[in-house]
Every structure is written in structure tokens, then in C-alpha cells.
Image (cartoon, rainbow, N blue to C red; front, top):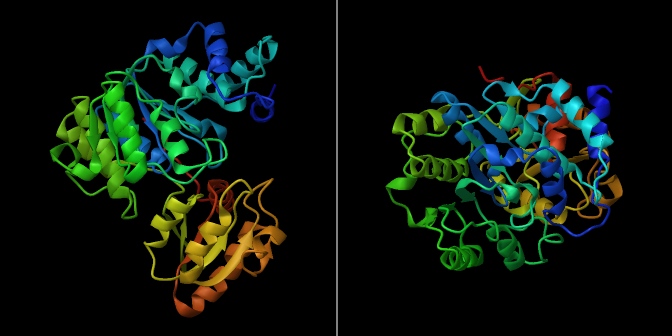
Length: 396
């Protein structure tokens, strides 16, 4: 089996309509000898900002230096981006070996892509004897595959917003209860949530006797010793959450500062120069993320692509007032069609994202405004790869 074949097989796996739950990933981990028991972890949950928080934490652990593991999703270009340690990406050969093993098993239930990917990550971390893993949840919290972690040292609940509503209860309160359901008894919780989300987090943290630290209440725990390396005003919140978690775990101020100042997170407020035009690519794919992104610009030429399961009308309504021009494109296989997008706002559609970018850049050359590409992280990854500028630094 080749690496592309192994990744394709992983993507083809689903729970076949079965309810969300932990039984599938628990069975896989049991077959593997429960590697999730081999390391402590920081569990990162929330609607937006999870990947950025992981990037700050990972940079701090790299600076210490410490044997660590980190997971994020989705990837930009290569599946291996999802699973990293102090040594870099998971080797392709290890992915192939795991898939060949998984294909030989007779699991009781259909095992989904994220269940398998989570089990692979934990097996890899155990093999590398990591001292700490920083694990990003997939969808939700209480029923997410990552909830099987038995030794969580800190839970970071970034925020509660409108995404995956159809999966997580159909309302903001439902999303909050699902995500806050991951809070563990006695384990500290750091959160940037507000409003109804924070109310539910407070309730569950109190019930489970989990110490709660709230960003909105401030204090030295959330202080920034340096400006964060990632662009965007919203990154200050993500940086403060990461700093608080590191301090709760006893890391030095030097480690906190190093993490905040050296973090790398491609595809988020990602700047580049294309045909003399400033271009910013950002994987914002839900209304809260798009609102925060739009605040960073007075105006822009917009290239937009998204998926049917996302609230793309709300995203476009947020972005359109600042857009000097608008072009649609195909984010990836299965993304929104021209017809669906044009029902929200009429605009030209380009099947090729690079053609959409080139057309937007032509107008941007005239008025000096930047081009903003957003709506899907898959779209951002496709463009970075096509432009030949994609790179996620391997760890030394």
C-alpha cells in the first residue's frame, strides 16, 4: 500500500450513520494496547481558535525543549500535518503501517476517519514517549474521540459559537453543553467564552469541581509577556489562553514568551505577495471566525469558497459590505456550486481557485486594496500548494 492509498482509505471510513460516541475509538485503542494512557495532555476544545492555541503551546514546548505531541485538524496540504511531535510530522511509513493493520481488524462497529486518526496519533505519541500532548478536539467535546484521554492536565475551551449546529444540538446552548461536557472532574478549565456559553461552562465546572479561569475576568494568569507572532487582533485572545494554560502547568515566563513569539500556524491570516498585490489567506469557515477576520480590514477584494454544511450566507453577509469585488471558487471536492453561491450574491465563479485569485489581483492592482481568500481551510491549502509557498516547519 502506498501513502496516498492509505490516506484515501482513511478518508473513506465513516460511522455509517451511527450515533456519535466514544465506543468506536475505545475499541481501536483497546486493540492497540491503550496508548492514550501513556502520556498527559492538554485538551483544546472550542468553536474557533483551537489550532492557533495549539500552535502557541507547541512553540513553547519546542522552546523548552520537551518531547511533545500535537494534533490539529484539518490539514492544509498533507495528512501528516495533523499529527506532530518534537521530531516533526508523523512519518508516512507509520501511517501506511497503521492503515494496513486497521484493514485487517474486524471491529464491532464501523470506525470513522477521525476515530482512526485519533488512535493513530495516540499510538505515535506513545511510541515517541512524549512528556505532554496538546490535543485539539474535532467536533464538540463530550462525544468527541479525543475525550477518551484519561490524563488531561488542563482543558482549554476557547469559545462557543455557531458552527456544527446540526451535529451539536441545533442551538448555541446545545453547542455549549456538548463542548462543556468535556470538562473533567477537578481538572482546571481556561476559557474565553462569553454569554450563554460561559454560563453553561460555569455550571458544569461547578458541578464537577473543576477550577475555572475566565479570560474576560483578566488577571496576571492571562498576561501577555510579548506580542503574539500570529497576525490578527483576535490572536491576542488565543495567545492569552495559551499563556494561562502554560502558567497553570508551571512553565516559566521565558517558555511562555517563546511560545507566543515563535508560533507558526499556516493558513490563518497568511500573507503573501502575488503579482505585486498583497494577498491574505485565512481558513475562517463559520460566522464568528469571519466576523473577527472582517474586522482586520477596511476593504478588500474577496475570493470565497465554502462547503454546503457551513452557514455560507451568514459569512457572505458579513464579508460583502467591505468587498470591493467578489469572486467565487471551488474550495475542494464537494464544495458549494456556483448556483448555490450565486443565490446569495451574484458574482463570477471560477472552478480553478488560482484563476479566481488572478482575476481578483488584476482589480487589486488598480486600487491598491488587498485580496482576501477565505471560507474554507481546504481552499487556503489548495492555493498555498498551487502557489508553491506552502511550508510548515519541521521541528528540530
